[in-house]
Length: 185
Ligand code: IMP
Ligand code: MG
View 1: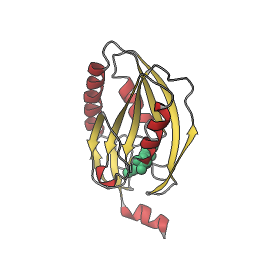
View 2: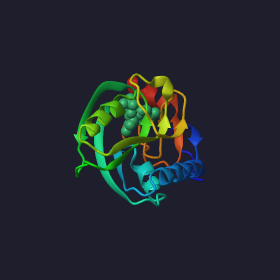
View 3: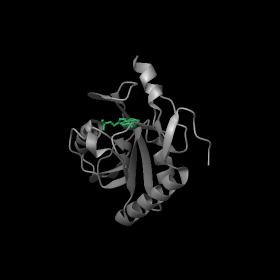
View 4: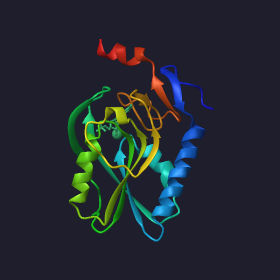
């Protein structure tokens, strides 16, 4: 296993645990979408690692597209405002869409995004999130596939960042409080 980063306090999910869970999610998706083509929409930037791993475990025909939203500044709390910073490349009309997210927190980003996508008349829209922090939910969101439910703690790695750092860590870990306390002083 990779050596732990000095800013990481503890590892929540190892590379092996992530791989195992992503395989299980892919199996469910393969089963549910049998006979269909699925359009995976990755919500950038956090979900790019999860998306890359998930798509390689799918056996159903699929396409990928990317979208970016921002609801956070560079800190650890949501600004409450969502905006689309990069839109999809293609139309989703009549497609079976699966939105792939890294983490569901307040729910504001996905709630906004789902409404926007539904207005474009896809055949269906479902959500797949690697992580869910239900304690932080402000807006209700229906999720079809969840990797792990986690407590209200700020995490990094496997695509997730703090101030655009740590996305490259192959595991998911909690940051040492000294890292973000130093920033807010
Ligand atoms: P929501 O709109 O509050 O649900 O925010 C979801 C987005 O916030 C995610 O896609 C992440 O980019 C970011 N986010 C929420 N919690 C964390 C975390 O613990 N670590 C890193 N990013 C997070
Ligand atoms: Mg994100």
